Length: 552
Image (cartoon, rainbow, N blue to C red; front, side, top):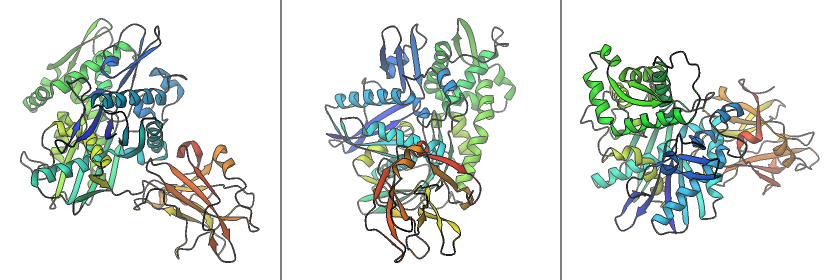
């Protein structure tokens, strides 16, 4: 049995294990060439056959082949049925089914590669931005449920991708400097689907190090047919712009998301990865000759038999249009009031898109990072660490060599009656509160006493959720039919009152716990009379108010 860490990326996936013989984490290469597994699944309609990874990607554009990409980013149900169909998904081949097939195949292949049969602890990195809203949070729960249901996995745990990368950087620091790192890491994780910017604090305690997320922001919600605000969207937009710049396609409307388009995007992706040094040198050379960008050819791709030229102007313009302002805004949000020059402050850039020259240049310019800057030294051994940090950090967490100090990604509680009869908001769990898994936290008043939830109809009408520390961001969440039915009949005292608690497990799933409430003593029962584990928050709640206070 082995513990594994996985970086399930929108474009590439990496799986790592800890090599006891070398005392180091190591990415697993399925083909003995590269550990980077394309996050791609193909479906042969004629043969009813699925393939994954490189084998699937190589079939892009072939007859009878349907290609599925970016399915990770579709686990949080942010696309309607029409737009999902435009990306080839249907009632059978849903994003969840495709993601489950892909993960099962890559994990079993990794086990076979290292001569193991079962996984003891599987730690999966998830975008930090998935913890910022009701629309994205359920991606975490869905992904953890998929991994937990594999019969060859003992336990599965989801962790923040930036926190996992911070764990690896702290480990690197310890290996390089032969001392524990204690300080802050500004982690900028730019991948294919999301931008996560996180300020983490690394705490040293003897032989153990802990990582705690302090501030975060990012981008990555899907809009219409587009995936996030990161590498995938950027590359698709560059190819779209280049195709429409040709005489043959300049008057064409929206391009179909078909094999020809995806193959062109794949060619651009391969060129950006393999020619990163050329891209950097060329942009530096043309920095003071902006007009020359129009004529400087980067890549020639084929689209439906026509030659399409991607220029450096396309690369620069699309970056300025869809990436620059998003990255600037999010960096400023996280670093507002933060002294980036303080002692033991490190800046780390990870993710495939984080290796793109224009991304690095914008970050380096903003923080005035020099070539020999203490803020970037001591945590990154080589450039490959940028792309492997999440996977390698995840396996360090799975082996408990480093731990994450779990904090709440949101506040959750109830609307209840105060002593004067007014309705007030009572949180059981507070945003960024340190948590213990599976511990029940109850909604209490300022004195620490359980507050009553009055249910004259026997129904639980509205809960309270907040994905920030701003009181004005709170909204009411009313149980949908499935959840409401599970909460009926649990209150049978004369006053029709109950106390409510919540718990969070290692997979980020939330459970609601209902306690009997004694009006005379103002206390709740020792044990809950009903506990309900939510499948996903979004599937169980309807948002009923986004106004301050939330009472409607």
